[in-house]
Image (cartoon, rainbow, N blue to C red; front, side, top):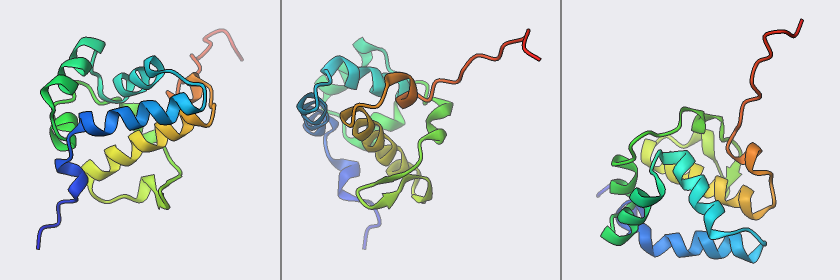
Length: 126
């Protein structure tokens, strides 16, 4: 019995439009979805488009991500009834983080919060 989940071999390009539709239904844009994806993975807009054109699966999409954002570990909470930070499989955790980011986008959360922007330290404070 294989432990690999079906989503791992699902073409990313087949799910991407669903992310965009979910965001657009709530007044967000495809560009915002792309921004979240690029923040998470380190892909630039051109590379993201290339991955979509190539029809890579989720496993390849994340395996080839040039610079996974270290702040992605700050993404916590429940998505699809699963607590993101408790997902044991590393690839499934990346997918759940992406799901959570798109959920936050669709719920109208500010982009700075979605992207876990850290306030710059003020050297003159204190």
